[in-house]
Length: 128
Length: 128
Image (cartoon, rainbow over all chains, first blue to last red; front, side):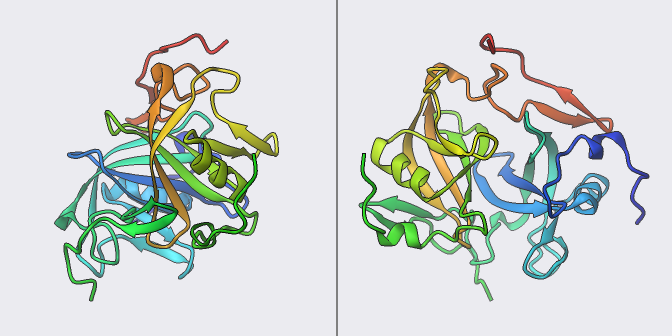
């Protein structure tokens, strides 16, 4: 797959010092916020071309086509950019209903309650 | 206002090299994603204590109690933490219905359409 030669819309993104932009994935059906990840320029270009979310894994330092190992792909309906150009919002269809590597629907399953983080969401899938 | 002495729940957050964590604000009524901003430890502690969103302004390098100048405060209903501990999700009531400094409901008002960012949301308030 080739990346289009420096299209303007990629230049409108304000990449940080590491060449990354924060990307929020929101489920199109429920509007639930599923996760926050990071994209480099190629990840965003590939997300656009594939129609599926591709992130940059900061821990593995490589492109991460979400779902490649889990099958939990994110089909992209919308790509949005914020006013400052330094954050992306993806509206996605979450295949399998599970975005989190722990097997939960959303990565934001811990809620502050009485000054403690309490788990609110049960497992939807075996994380293994 | 004083900050509690290093409570455990603040230690559970994985602050980045700049001592910051990304914070998504989501409208509790509509589930619309309003904005992405950053918090330092004191901003998150103050958000908890006030029940209103307090961020760290990276451009002004100071705490930013959102709404102090605009009146568009964010009343916090929920504070959530993601699986990796490096992203916060606030469920907020957006006073005035306007989160963006441009006068729009959400900062994510530009949508990628035919390889261009197209404005989708009209002004709700005079940005001045």
